[in-house]
Image 1 (cartoon, rainbow, N blue to C red):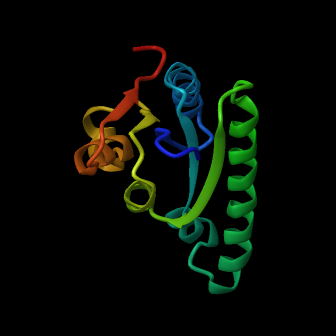
Image 2 (spheres, rainbow, N blue to C red; image 1 turned 180 degrees about the horizontal axis):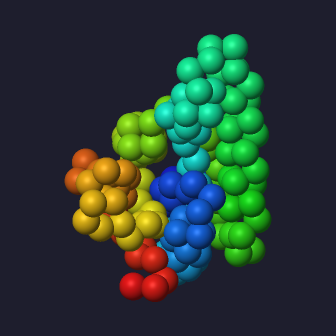
Length: 149
């Protein structure tokens, strides 16, 4: 990163919602001359779910999800328009915690992320990473809504 250059943190999960947010972040980065930090979290709760409580399956499941995460990050990097600086980062953990950790580490100008648009009971049961990031973030958060909103 060039000294004084703004960074935009873009958490991605491979969903159409995060891809939409990435596209918005690319346009914003181009307009501002900012660098994108594309960030994927290998969600350890998925490792627990996929291994079904069988300890011997945990390393295999973790490796699969890390491989999938690298592919998601690589695919996202290939979506970035020429002339826009971007890098990828990957971490293992709980998404909300890891997004907060990297935001504290790199101190971006802001965060751009997608929302699944859950409401009501689904939101209460599943939670909202985007909402949690927005509540905890010391920097502005742009939440890109689903395209059907």
